[in-house]
Amino acid sequence: MLSGHFVRLRAYEREDLEKARAIYNDPEVNMYLRPDIPFPLKAEDEIRWYESQNPYGSGSYSFAIERLEDRQYLGSCGIDTVDWKNSHASVGLFLDKLYWNKGYGTDALSTLVDFCFQEMNLHKVYLYVFAYNQRAIHTYEKIGFKIDGTLRENVFKNGKYQDELVMSVLRNEWTLPSND
Image (cartoon, rainbow, N blue to C red; front, side, top):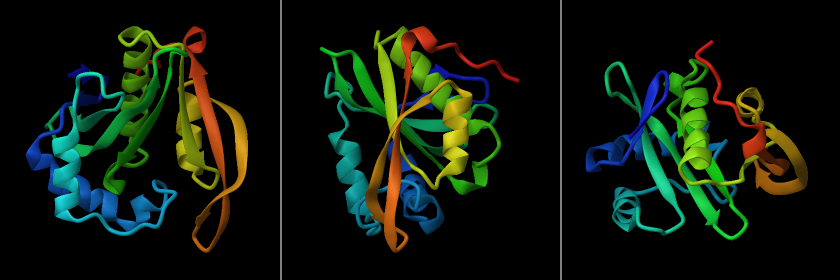
């Protein structure tokens, strides 16, 4: 388990799956997550995903995000596409909309990125974000991510082609944000 100021990142448990599916299927949350067709996940999809999780070198690591004060499940974050040769990986995050704008996402992502640098010995951590997701972009910039580039009209979302940003932070730029 990895602890931040407000959240803990831990392994998924079976009892998290229905909560995760409900959050993921919420149209207001989902509009910021998936570049593909937002078809709702079924319970069987979540179970199949859960049973496929392998912490032993699969190159993909998913964490449940829980609030420290009461162990409430808030969402998920993870590390994907680890490239050990070039020492980088992508990260992602989603939170229940009830917990937006309260510092939980910033704390979870900061904790995850710190883990990438301190424990996985990565050189760079990157992510993709829809250009219209200004709240997320602000969070990422606040913890040190910089915009590397714009993938112009890269995804069809909300009835039109949307830009997608690539953002990253390098190990030598990283400082774990304070609790302020």
